[in-house]
Image (tube, rainbow, N blue to C red; front, side):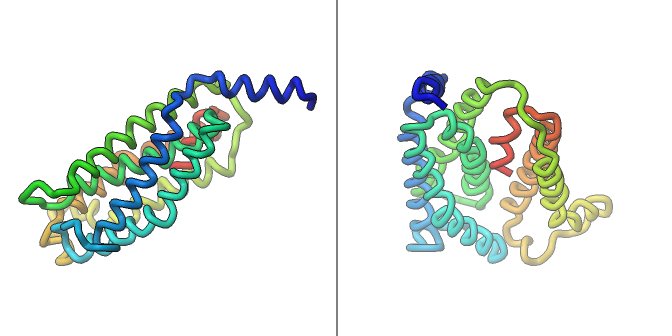
Length: 228
């Protein structure tokens, strides 16, 4: 490849419609995720989650994943956006969607009877998640409409769409007989129902869409697959 070709490629990517605030915004989200995790039951236990022990264990696990995995990913993508904004936008589609998904649970799931001090932080993370996901999606839409189909990734996406609902099978089958929830959920089931709604009602249909997109070679499906 000649130097003129490299220059043209670099110029082409830098001229794509990716907002210059993408990089700093991703870094801020990464740092905010770390702060939220450290303030919660994983760290200083400064955030009160009125949920059952079962859901508290899940919350601690997600906080650990946010601190050790997602926060560094966001900071890395923010730094990448300085030189490769289109690539960063594509790779950010999954993580930003995850943030919106996660903080629907944190804000709407616990049975708060007072306004928690962390409300503004978590609302901000939720809004940043879906706004950045929308911005990343706009960047992805400027890619070519067709790429090489990927049967292997399509099978993985289908497998995820089939695997995620398995944990909810007892509840879904129990809906036919009005079966009571288990004792581990009876004390505060709101977050469980919210997660079920997001997993089965949002993630599964999106995973099926991504699988079809990968099978047909749609360019938007490749970065979307990173969010599965």
